[in-house]
Length: 205
Image 1 (tube, one colour):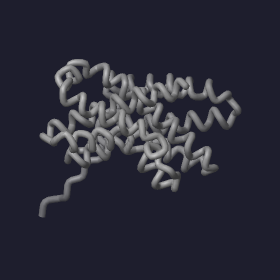
Image 2 (image 1 turned 135 degrees about the horizontal axis):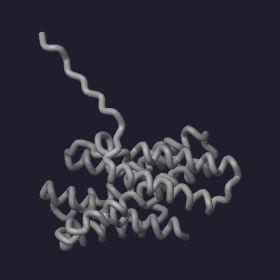
Image 3 (image 1 turned 45 degrees about the vertical axis):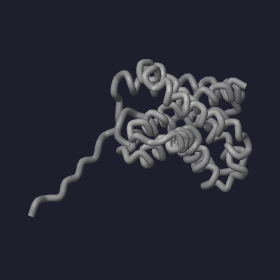
């Protein structure tokens, strides 16, 4: 129940950030809804396609698509308010990242897939929505060059699987993974933690 509520909060917040990205590219309302939905539920969609998990999440639960489209359209009216409360959306984004990662793990587990694939499913679910948003709006993918993001999703997936392996109750596993993953993501934002950057330049002839 808690995970479902947090998921709805997460896709709403992600849809709004996607709508803002669309607005910066001067897209029309249809474009706003497309980018908002891709940002919010794109990760889960990519995961389901890669794993052959059907029906897709938003097909089985069309209310999620309605929520993302409405959130996107509301952002066209409340855009300035959304920007003003940017810090709140950073918090909601962090919650969404971990919730999406846990759900990605759960889907792969129910399919009987290997631990490695379960972790991959967690990362795909957690970060591919943002990747799709940046690709559609022609931005440099934020998840690949800023503070720890995909890495947090990866670690959350490993933690979730490890705790289940040692027979920790599912509710406790979910709560601990949420708490640790959220704390790590917020610490990464606050302290600007990031992975080493690879810089390569060809030698001039």
